[in-house]
Image (cartoon, rainbow, N blue to C red; front, side, top):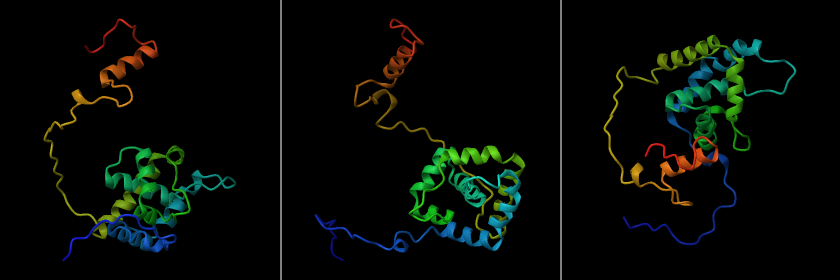
Length: 192
């Protein structure tokens, strides 16, 4: 086998069929299949219908909202901003959500509005339904969680990190912000 080279200047393809961009993710593709077979989207729409106005601009469908929350749960993403960013950035997750490339994924503020609209018991029922389907189909296994809590100090330790634009370390940056907002005087030295 010969050594491949990255190559220098070359003209990129002008047009590429969207089907060639992502083959999806095996787990999420299988999950979508079993959710469809279980009638997940239809049952969620029935469950959530009383909490939506009939004559307003359509919101993100409940199936998309709960899929996004499921992504956050399964991938350990703790914030709605993080979930929204991850879904916007990933071709396989867009496919899981059923959102084509030309459309935007729901914004994190939309997730907040939907979360505020739906009561806790609806969220519990939806998550129970998703996790039951996943468990019944054998998509997730395992009863043990392992955590590696080894503390390693990186070469870029907190003591050596400075801002490129000002040369401040984190303590100097924090002190300056506190002084600008009037929380401390010029003479104060918090944390020194």
